[in-house]
Image (tube, rainbow, N blue to C red; front, side, top):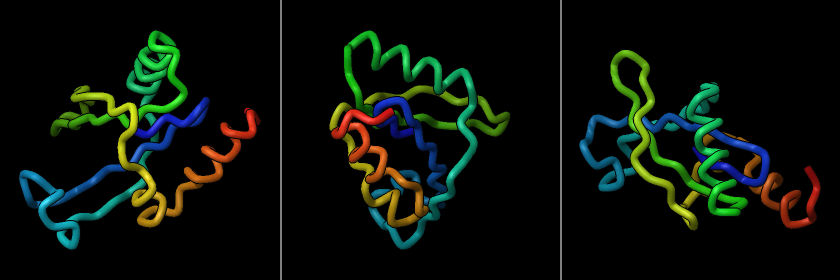
Length: 100
């Protein structure tokens, strides 16, 4: 989940590899619905640190439970826009221009 200002973007990265970063050709990226609890907790985390951006990593188990792994304050996200078409750059531009 990438949070940019008041907007959040969730992408499921699926791969048959334990570490999908070793071979990007073997993964798929799909936008997913943002569950309320992880979204609210991510927002609370950013508010606590007075941050406007966070690249949150989660694992989702077979029951659909989201497990928090980490928040990267300068995580990589642009490649996800290319893969999914999500308007992440526009959200960042709006944030920089201070539009809601």
